[in-house]
Length: 330
Image (tube, rainbow, N blue to C red; front, top):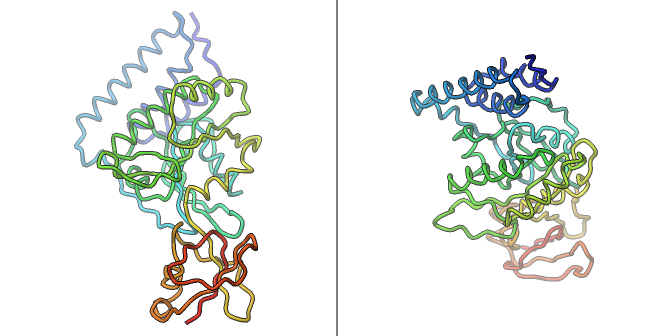
């Protein structure tokens, strides 16, 4: 009996020959198994792939721990903050980054197109935010270097394919991976770590490919099954649905404020704002500009973006808001 395999099978199978690690091969074979139609003509092929997975996992167990850890990656932070994107194979992380940055990113319909962490810069109003594309996460593939990158990033975005029936299972898998590493995804306003989860990470969940017919049902399932401690957004990298508000949501993850300096008698510089964490004060800004300013600071004058505050004289412990204009007086 012929196997009658769909065209998608052969596209994914091509990537199997390019896979370098056993983890990549396992993820691709699992994808192939989900594609193969189940009938008598495919029984031997299914058995063969299952045997390959078993063999690869056995080899993984025999391999020394040190060699399984992989390389340690470190990407220096740039711009107003660093946000890392994670997700299962073919969730569309790279497509989203391309849509947000306008930079051409390698995108394909087979797993593991992204093989290493790669930085890109997204424009948001008058600042830039660094987005990090990463290799996909699977049940058996979550490298230690990626864990460390997540811990040090300023924000986290989980990307899922909203058209896949197993998207809720993939979300649970990723959340379990994170919690196993003591990383707790939270809303951007949650900032108090615990002994159980010392690494709180402000998180946004993106259901990508929302333009596809199956997406509505998956969105409903995730909303019913999960009590998410972070925001969920439906987007489409292909049609740009939901992307108009996404940069602002990413900016919110950073929990920072933009501040404009002003020399007495001159216009402020709106092109290159200073970036500070929310809750920062006049004294914090003075320290950032120059250490002598902090020591000699007498008072400051503030202009708010809304115009409600205009030249108000404030003390050094005044808490700054986003897009305040500050004039320091020594």
